[in-house]
Length: 411
Image (cartoon, rainbow, N blue to C red):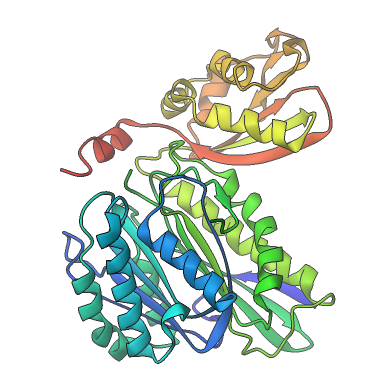
């Protein structure tokens, strides 16, 4: 049994159809409604934003998964309008789109999973989504062209589509995973299980392994924690963040003790790739920075330090100009709330020593560190000297372009 990543056009999972059309929601006139259909139905698990302000599709999607016990036959995504802070009219509009999708694709209403992304607080144009259903039905297909259309239509401020694939070979039978996502701003996902701003992270994971909803709910958090829950572009958690995992079962291969390890590894591979693509395509991003925190007392401490640094405007602006200002790193580590002795901390930027023993490293070479930070991607290593726990957290710089994009997003 083995698994591998795939960058080509093959390897789409069986049991799904994709399609997208222009419904007139995006001001650009680009495709803005995307649908994925599982004609035989699919088991499903989802994780949502922990923001206390949630969009209408998050509310409706939770209800539907609870009502069906985790069964989805159609996913309907619109881009250009978040359908958040739109009141009861937003909920009803979301319901209307689910009803129309159910009638169009021959499933029950509760088996439709809705998603939205775009600007917050603008009345939701449900009529445009409803009117688009017949056109989408006419273009649905199981090929790379249709899957790419789905991936492209869900984008907002993204500059490129984001997809990833992996294949598991089980006794000569291929089990496939296909992931697609969008996200470039308002990215600091804090995803949790389904329990009673403007841009968003939406992630859809399709596989043809045979698994029930309970099994998917078990494997999903482990893949999400080290990927989507370990990235940040700007520290803002969206009202619409959603990760949905669908299993059609068409491969005939069961998710069980024999296949679980390989499947989880493949799922983590796909999620990790998508998470990296989100940060790499962040609004105005010039540098992708990996924060490798080690020597922490607990993994939670390591991630708390990473988030403190990743959300520091002073650190992020220094990165934009390749300024090796290690003092900002130490300051953000210090106010994170994690207990440590500064005398035990060491910091390396791009593999070069900059801080140790409570002061600037004797080996610190400012010019060399600056040069290392001019690379598109580099790593900042911080050893807290307190224990054995660690984490890797992916973030980026803060540039003038980011400010321009978000200063007048709604106007």
